[in-house]
Length: 317
Ligand SMILES: NC(=O)C1=CN([C@@H]2O[C@H](COP(=O)(O)OP(=O)(O)OC[C@H]3O[C@@H](n4cnc5c(N)ncnc54)[C@H](OP(=O)(O)O)[C@@H]3O)[C@@H](O)[C@H]2O)C=CC1
Ligand SMILES: CC(=O)N[C@@H](CCC(=O)OP(=O)(O)O)C(=O)O
Image (cartoon, rainbow, N blue to C red; front, side, top):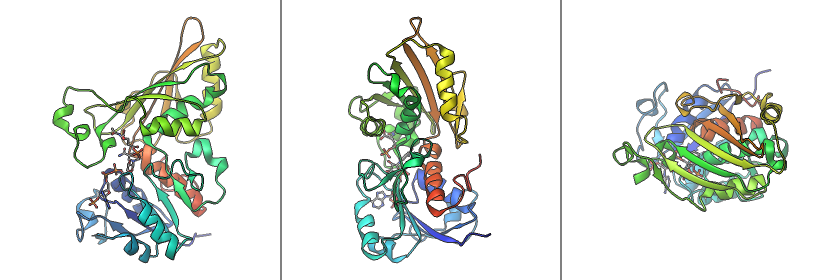
């Protein structure tokens, strides 16, 4: 049976994640891109900015009321942190049944919103029409820690390195290729948003130290886990295989994965599993493309489930 088409719009469509979402939606059999909002590209053709996009759709600069007036079945908010609320309020007021997926951190701590990291929270979706998409580093941290969560003797310590597309398009030191050249830039070494997010959703304190590197896309999180009892490497591996072997978008690898191999991939890789001589310390390495499994692909998984189609529709797996 063919599924009824659904319209979808993106607010913040000029950004790095917006571009990836446009590509995914263009290949979707059920979703029809009905509007893309950008102030800077107002009036310009999407096809002139997104490689591989065909068609006459143009960007429009839409405020919150104008977005709600589009009457799309699904709205994706791909705005910087702190900007989502007026759009959510306008949709709530005029078309509360609209499915809203927010890519920012704005609703990741709000219990009225479903936190959509499907491999870990799939079973908790109760038909919510408000979905908060996890942060990119937080996704890698939560995938790395969950299989050993019940065996931890201390907070996980996570060292993160991201490509600079993670810092969005608003100019800053963190996305300035000149300043990043031959460099590794530490930032937010305590209290990063994703430290709080992963701590909340894992239900245990996490310590996270992010850095940004000269490559464009893809991140690595190396996590140190102190265990409450000795474990053999094969038992650690068995736990990760049990957790993710049924997952199409998470690969468990024997060796520590390399970020250079994950760019443009829709999957996350978790591997390494170095165990200390006393068997009470494990180091796990996770990589993913921050713009895909860390953002757009995960959004697509969440939207697919919420509109009642296969979770992997339009995601090349
Ligand atoms: N980049 C990444 O790796 C990841 C990003 N995220 C989150 O996704 C969201 C989008 O990220 P990303 O695509 O990188 O961001 P970008 O900076 O690349 O894009 C932001 C978009 O929002 C628009 N915008 C900016 N300020 C405003 C405003 N005040 N009002 C309306 N529109 C505005 C911009 O377009 P215009 O100025 O033309 O209107 C642009 O389209 C962020 O919340 C980010 O934290 C989540 C996971 C990973
Ligand atoms: C390199 C870099 O700056 N990365 C971003 C993470 C991007 C992301 O996922 O951010 P949100 O939680 O805001 O959605 C950061 O550390 O803030």
